[in-house]
Image 1 (tube, rainbow, N blue to C red):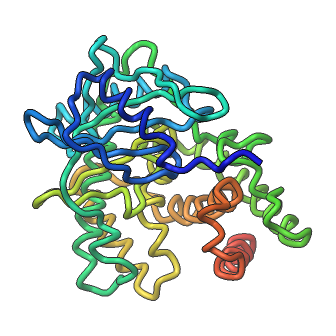
Image 2: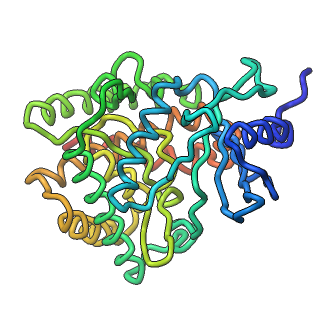
Length: 331
């Protein structure tokens, strides 16, 4: 049986990527191997820190990676705290680097390393009143992002996937057929199929009623929200796409859903958001729908990521999901 790849197997690839980006590494430290393989690089002459990523094969084509960098560059130019890219020595944002993966290579990209801590590491599972100002600030951050995306002139050749009706609940959703997941028994599959049908009808209603749709981060959970000095920023735009703005908001709120004080957390978030971007009159109904859709999406994610999902046993999440679906179907 072939040896399972670990982050140590990518050390040579990381060094080759550093060379391709014209960086002399005084330190090249492995950080994580989840979707992407990430190293932290300290440049020898300046001491500048960089994040060097070897992007997972088969997820994004080169043009979609370049589009992500185009957007984050535009956001950084507006003063937002987001990943700031560095071009390779040949002028490109990404370069192919030989790796031990079955396909033989990954695209490597480099961004400036933003010092700070994530909002998840700051507040953890606490959702008491002392955390609510953080959600107010997080709402303002998403509102600022959405204001930018609605005003930005998207460049020619820009390509990202779409979390539209087909992308969420079609025959081949972007994150997989959650109602047919191998994690579910037959009864649970029938329940999630009913949820899919319910959500599909409501998404068509939202679309007909003009729910706002555009470029979104799509992965703004608290581990991707960075506290950098006195500012909040967003990291990891790997999942950015076209989608409903309310879905983006629900990703940020989802870990608080079900908490006894969720209504207060949500209201603080929305108050912050409204400082930067207008709210639609039916925003609460939109949030109810997309919170459930986020839960359904995570069923497929758990199936795709058994290394992480092993610590998230089904009995820890399925009862709440079933309860939320039944509540929605009865509404």
